[in-house]
Length: 197
Length: 185
Image (cartoon, rainbow over all chains, first blue to last red; front, top):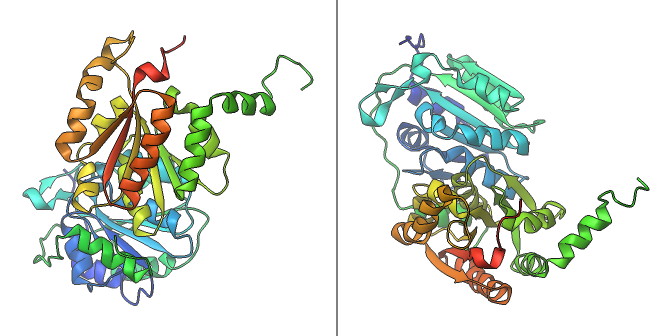
């Protein structure tokens, strides 16, 4: 097991990442990333997952392909992304220019008792993303670096971006978004000017 | 390229056109305003995949595993796009937990599933999932509509597309192996 060597708090990191986000669309992976995104400010351009483990990045892909005129960010956890590694290959070959995957990496499964994940055992997700064809791949562990990521997410790129934000393992107080996916879906679609369904 | 035995684009187009149900399905799905197609290849879907890949107005995504398509379809719908997923029956097993997303969010979902393991099957490894395909889909809350002939298939897909995109249902069209035919080696 390796120490995270990060003093960065996840809640603070996501708050900085999503500050002044403008019309950025955000999909959050189940567990702590959904709480972090909610704590940063609930808004209709957020779609919170409470399940579908391994699917967050792909929900982001479908959305990014449907709305090439908008920037899309997926904020998820290391455990969630590890369950969908193949999805990184899928996104890598599609090469959307408006999609950023941000993994909030504490090296733990926070929802289930802080058991160590593969990244906590030294697996480097960013190298997998790079091998899958993500062009802009970064690993950061300070707020200054997170601020730089925020600006990058707003810009068009040659292909998908993959950012790993190393955070400390301390649990944060839960900030729970609503669990009704139908509500989340209709609220999100209304925000984009689409009819409810 | 003057070799008459070589496979030219024209030959390819002709071979596609001869398989009328694929062309009919393609036209009908276009007519239903499908904008995204996600698939893990199957021989039964080969011509439909070829048609969609050649269409610049359709975004096609090849998947490493079928469950990715369920997540893509949900994200596409959030952004206003209609998606169809193409897979073989074995892929249904890969989708099960991800289908929670479509069911709990009442996301429109249209899957076209080509069956293996049920008719003139030579590979015993295809049989268990073939037996379990419809049961699994029912168990998680996905409606199954079965088609055993090209005419029935076209009609069934039209109905399923309406159920999915207009009535927010999660629908799998099950395409019988008898219709697809034996796997040729």
